[in-house]
Amino acid sequence: MSDAKLTQQSEALEHCGYQIRLIQSGSEWMAFVARPKQRPTLIMAPDREAVTAKAKEWIAAQLTSTNDR
Image 1: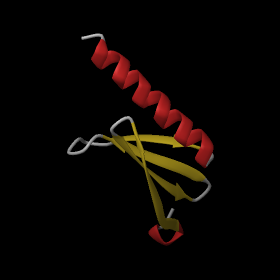
Image 2: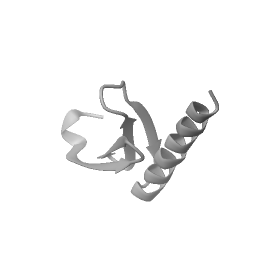
Image 3: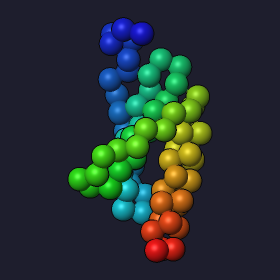
């Protein structure tokens, strides 16, 4: 896929101290999820709602594992 086909629009959301940056690439959506000054995790899904839900589930799992320490 060429760079010209990538959608340049992105949207940023905040959830529990994490930033979720949403980008549509062709027919798929990508979410880059990270806390400030952290390397982001990439999550992919076929639509915006699914990628947002997966990102929030990933954040919940991170928060649970942090609380278990």
